[in-house]
Length: 164
Image (cartoon, rainbow, N blue to C red; front, side, top):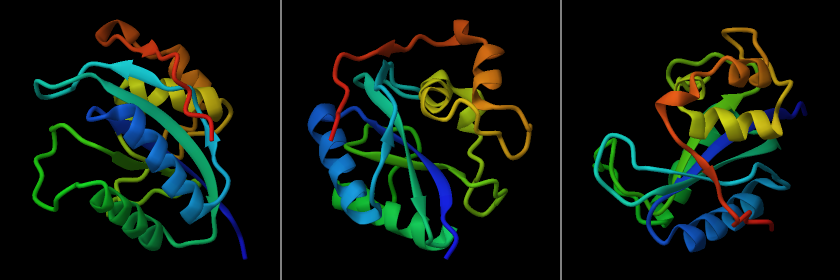
């Protein structure tokens, strides 16, 4: 069966070291070997809250986009996310399906618009997938990062790297 290269955005601003480490372990036990970016710290976006740690992981799966998205939501629920949470709020664990191979799927918001909008998504993605081409723009993640206006936000690489 064909394996699809997938990239996930991971974030937390509640007990972030513990929740990211535990979240990574859960993702790895559910989906296999992960490629991890460095972690970055950034302020809360769209609301007042504690700073977030964000990173990106890559994995290969033979699951459908539907089954993977469902499984990721279930992991978020295990970490206390509720179905009626507001979009911009504090999170123990936030998992975003950024890329599912070269698929363009509006239902699942893939490729996720956050890739080209936020440095805390694009920078870690370019760290681990520099030559991966965005399915819509056709640019590599490095090309997108090199032309990104990073003056809008400030991210800081964290000393915590969450190596499993």
